[in-house]
Image (tube, rainbow, N blue to C red; front, side, top):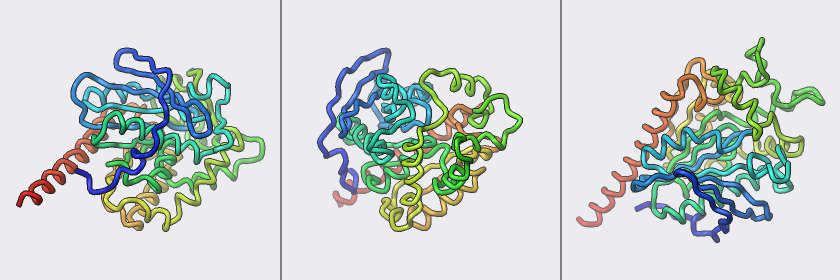
Length: 328
């Protein structure tokens, strides 16, 4: 039994529409508060569910790139949910609005994640809930926990860091240039503009030739994203995070988004300074931005699963101790 209220899950549920199933994968949509249809995926198996993992993908990609990870989690008896963020994937394809968050901006993207959580929790009440965010999705998860940390049991951040550090580099980009071009600079000479993503050239090429992937956001959406940096760096805001929230941060040592671990270490220090004490991390020498698509991704996923299992064990131990205390 949790000792904190499940606030977001008790809100009015977004309506699911147009659900389709295929071999453990169900596609569905919900309508966001501004009327946008948000494309979602649920991966599930046939055995009893241990917990729920919600994945928030990164900039310029889509939730389908996490199918391999989702299948691994399903084999470990988790159910997995994810959505294509506004301006991304199937959410954007119908209107051709790739890279465009729309008037609601980055804040509405984060609220879409809250809506998906409400759907997932309604389908699996009482199950442990883990939020996993990668890159832009990790920064969205950082904002998510400022208001909703009591609604999840653990947070995992991949390809993350401090957004204010990333914003300084992006804002120094010459006028007319892609604001994210600096990410590839450390790997020159490069074969592609996306070499910074992974040492696995097959994964890099898969991203480049994926028709649902693209290099960056449009200017208003990029500014909306970078504008979140001030709140994410504010100590008073960070103190809103539940002190007992388990956080797991994993990063490649050469990830430019994490400023080669400098930004990642600053993020960890900020959470400690805010009173969040349960922070674990794994840093991978030589790894680039997408550790879940790196040459050693098997090791990365194994360590992620170990951390999630540890969170579930601590929850079970705490619940058992609570029951024993009541029976004394």
